[in-house]
Length: 97
Image 1: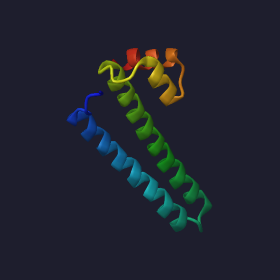
Image 2: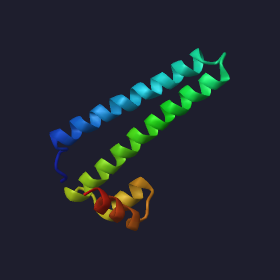
Image 3: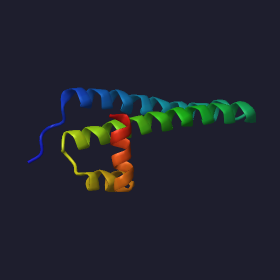
């Protein structure tokens, strides 16, 4: 049986999930509010999507590192879950360790 998620990693991930949720909500509001100004609409949505993408990628990298270091998943399992090659997982873990 697998161990439970460490409190620290869960709290950090919950903070990131909340940030992603807020960015997603902002996207909906910006879409509606900026519809009369094409330039501002584009600018607002691009910024929010870039922030959302960055936050999601940072979270994915942190969870990848945790899964490998804690041995809760194998490199193959992480690669499959993240839709990456095993080599990409090794590079990610080595680069950010």
